[in-house]
Structures are given as structure tokens and as C-alpha cells.
Length: 218
Image 1: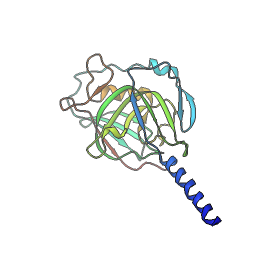
Image 2: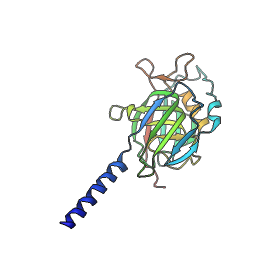
Image 3: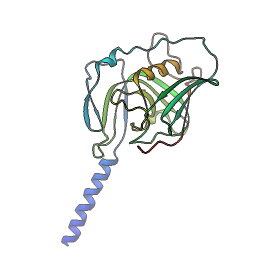
């Protein structure tokens, strides 16, 4: 009888741990702009400060009429690098950080919306992957018919690490903030006049994003 009681307790404990450890629902909340009151963040259970310079990083001016060729963003997981093309011409090449605690999906997607600042949270306190990140800059959610943009995968700037070229994310594609701004301004959808955020439509398609390769273990 005593043995059965002990086993029951063990089962309950591991059941509770499993639920908490796998509760990694991610939440995303677009911000109307930079929120100066949100100065504290958490990454992988560790508190950090949101750097003040985030508020003053400008969006590079968009140059219109340079090319009518299709824009495509390639993300090479194996080499942790992003390539931006117009037709057959390489326009940008940047180091990125893709999924370490969560898998970055492979396949062909389109940018569904763009937000100048967004608040992100998720991960698991039990697995020490919990994060709360306000004022995330230059976020571009992408999706397709199988993995909709509402799943939360995106390209965005990251202020909480500087280890680009190595997997660091929970599934998103991290870029240096200045480089994320360049891609944000270059990629479609075209933002409405005077707006810093916008949503793609049939008349204003988002840029294709093609992700391939295998993320390194380290």
C-alpha cells in the first residue's frame, strides 16, 4: 500500500513537471510605438535591461524605383546567414541566429505583417527558457498555408545577445538591430504612407522567405 502511494506521488510530480516544462506558448503583442516605461526584460529566466538606444535607432529611408525584380529572402540555417536578393542580384548578406530552444521551420513563406515594435513572451520557467521581451524592433512575421504567421515565427532585431552566426533563438530569425532595420525597410509589404507598421494583402504581397538547411547543434 505504501509503495503504491509513493508511486502515485512520483507520477503526479512528473506529470506536473511535464506540463510546466512543455508549457511554451508564445505570445506577441504589437506596440503602437516604443514604450519608454518598459525598461526591464527577461531572457532564459534571466532579468536584463532594455537598452535605451532602441528608442533612437532610425528606420533607414526606403529607396524607391531601384529595381522591379522580385525580392526574395533566403535564410541558410546551416551557415546561420540571411541573403536578400532582387532577381539574381545579391543585395544584402547578414549573420543571423536561428532556433536553439525552438526549431526554426524550413520551407517557403511570405512576410504577412511588419511591426516596428512588439512585445514577446513565452518559453518555460521549468526549462529555464522563459522570456519576456518588450520593445522588440523590426519584427516581420512570416507564414504559409501549413504554418500561418499566427504561429509567431518572424525575422526581428535582437537586443539581448550579440552572438549572431550561432543558434540563439526560440525559433525566430534574430538579426542585429541595424541590419534588421535595413531588411524591414527593404522587404515588402510596402508600409502605408506615414506608418511604421503594416499588413500584407493580395495587392501588397509580402516578400518571399525561403528557409533551408540544418541548424547547427551549438
